[in-house]
Length: 296
Ligand code: ADP
Image (tube, rainbow, N blue to C red; front, top):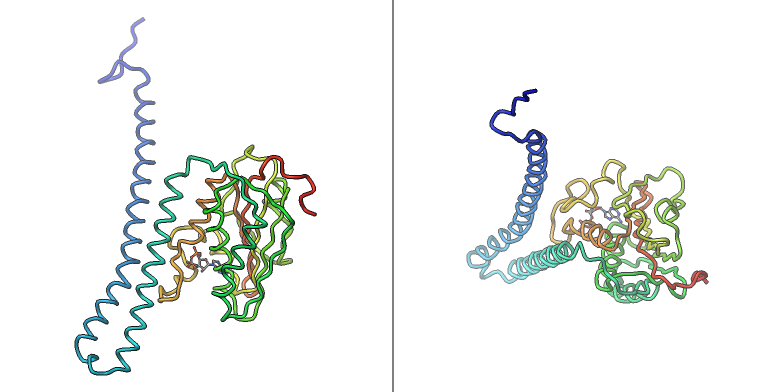
């Protein structure tokens, strides 16, 4: 029998190949668009404080030159702006560093109980003004497989947020739980009681680990609306489009945490209740050889 060849091609699979190429192209296009969006956002975020600096320099050269009071005020605003820019650049660098080694899982052993204690002592003086009670509940040891610097960054970001989005004199609790099965790590009993909303921000790859060490940071702060939860770990996302004032965050902290968690083959969830507080939980594969009863 005579089978007519496809027009323009004698490869019977050509239409399917074309479809494959097409869908490949869309994912490349999507990645391109995300990169372009990211660059546009980053440039915008950097341009804002820069424009304000230029404005103040102009004013200082002009009529504020002979007004010491105005000069001091402007200089301190300018210092805030430069600090904001350097926070942003630091966060952008962290993000690109984690992205670069995304495909290489870390292989060190890190004791999260010890690390949490160190980060808390480091932060204590910086948050002293706010009189927030910062406590750690941890076992003697909680060995996870990870990269020490990046795990430090997870603690810093989560604890700094808990403090930033809480009223003075409230409490922040950091809890480390070793030996958790995936289900226990992913769906722990809520620490906020009934009515809290939960969202998975990063799911662990199945089959990566038998047990996990969970890091939970609980605050009594403003909480987060259910509708905002899914977008929290997007780059530059801030609830309610919070003004990018000099002391505001960069909107990159949770995106960085999410990438670090992914690289560690761990998971990341949030529980929150507006007006009552939030609990952010990140969990990491436990190091083999961690004692079964490491909780005591
Ligand atoms: P930022 O640098 O703005 O804090 P993040 O990526 O760390 O950026 O957080 C994104 C947004 O999520 C924040 O702008 C804030 O609106 C919200 N958020 C993060 N942590 C908390 C928290 N503990 N309580 C309430 N809101 C939070």
